[in-house]
Image 1: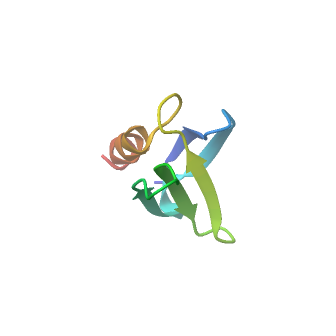
Image 2 (image 1 turned 120 degrees about the horizontal axis):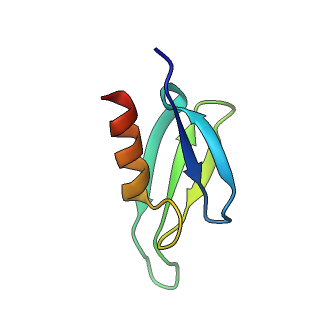
Length: 71
């Protein structure tokens, strides 16, 4: 069965994503002058969706959505 989720990125743009096309969800900690960020990697032409740190769909929100869709 194909499952889809909505992911809202850091620019408040919504993406309708097939859960089976998600390769990895990464969280990069802050490093020096660079702030922490997270992103979703899709296997469709190595596309990335940069996630919000506070407002929209955060790393934890997206992981919860994926787990819910796969349950």
